[in-house]
Length: 313
Image (cartoon, rainbow, N blue to C red; front, top):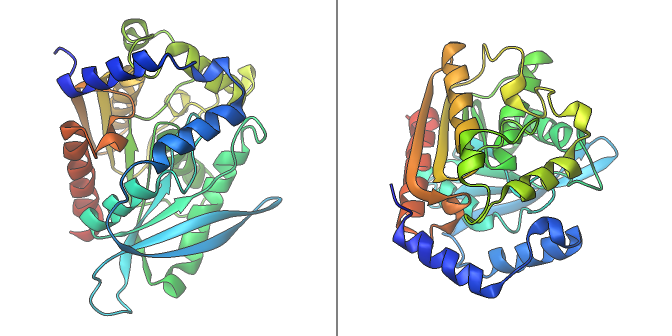
């Protein structure tokens, strides 16, 4: 399919700005630019919001809890999605994913806990994974206190957040910890050991996320010898058995398209129930463009429906 007309307009506007790619400027500048873009978006639906500190090795990280409104009884117990933001393991924050989390909480009728895991290159692998695993553990421990249903817990994320959601499931399974009920993986990074799939060749540049940017993200996050580790690249995991059901989204004009779909295939072959959906004409990042992309709104609806089906019933 040809690229979506709305996406083409976005890419044309972006090209006119002649902005440097992420690998061409200091990470602090990239973070500032990312924050300015995301915080300029319209706010999401109202929610009951509270901030918490999750203990992690070496300190604590922020976790922001969104409870949908109205809940009815103030003491209502709700299922929860533990959300890990995208940004190539180096960018992004709880604040920048605020709109996505509010929309998911509102439409899926579940709580969303957004985790401010520590970023590379200051904190390389395995810090982010350990932070995410600690947040999941914390949810199970604090569920009753927070009004959450510990039997209905999902993990999810977009891009690098999708990688961390998948890796957190693997980590919990392998370490005898409680495994979530569901995983929502939105154009996830599943392999940073190579960048040679057909979708990398077809979409190496010109479609927002570039191959060079992905290679740079990988260099910031993990040493080369670690990138075939299944906790870094879930596609390289020795076994995908006994993992939770998944809904995986991919985008046609995304370098990550093929690895997301291959991960869905390998999960299925391992006996895991998976629904995978490719959004034709779309680029990486389209899910968070739901304020001005029709396909982004459809994806938000689909993700919320999958969560409702898995957690709410």
